[in-house]
Length: 102
Image (cartoon, rainbow, N blue to C red; front, side, top):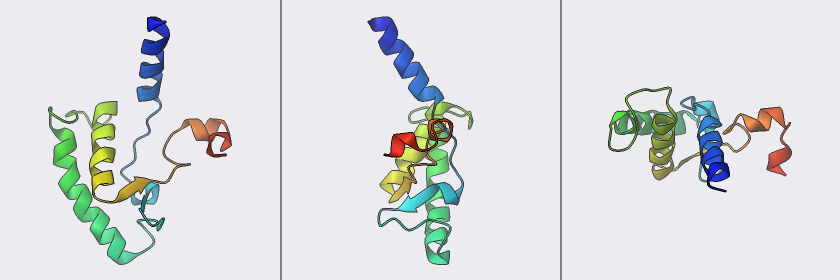
């Protein structure tokens, strides 16, 4: 049982996709971050604030390709009102053709 739990945790970290592109994020209201110039400027400011936090050892990792860095960046962007766009948040949805969104 413990082995299955460990395997599940490892797979969940492995399935986190990198997402710094504004097209991967939307505001709490559902507006894509790259669709509005004002919202895009807000996203850029939030990203400039969140990247050093994600690079730190206390929150994330200095390796920008690691899962801990990506998770710390997503958490910080979420606090600044930017949310992943659901379908594009995880690579498993590309494999299952949006089956997990239903």
